[in-house]
Length: 91
Ligand SMILES: [Zn+2]
Image (cartoon, rainbow, N blue to C red):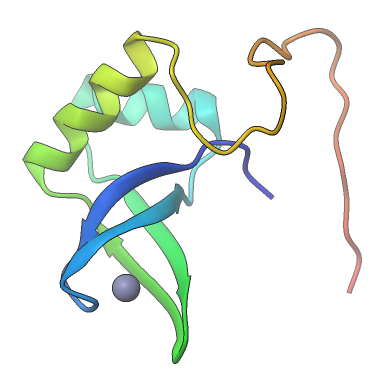
C-alpha cells in the first residue's frame, strides 16, 4: 500500500478522483524531478484505472509534495521517516 493520495484528473472517469502513485514516495519524487512518467492508479467501479499523469497533473503533484500537504493519511502524522518499518500483505 502507498500512503500518498492526491487529486488528479482521470480521463476514463472524466473527472477528478483520488489517486495513488504506483511508485513509492522516494521514487515518485525522483521521477518528478527527472520529468519521467508518473503512473497512478485508482479504484473504480469497473476495476482499477491506471495511467500516466499529464504534465499539468505532475506539476500539481510536485507542488502538493513541496507543500508537505499529502491527502489520505488519517491523523496528522505526516512525517513518518523514522526507521524502516514495512507492511506486508501476503496473498
Ligand atoms: Zn477513473
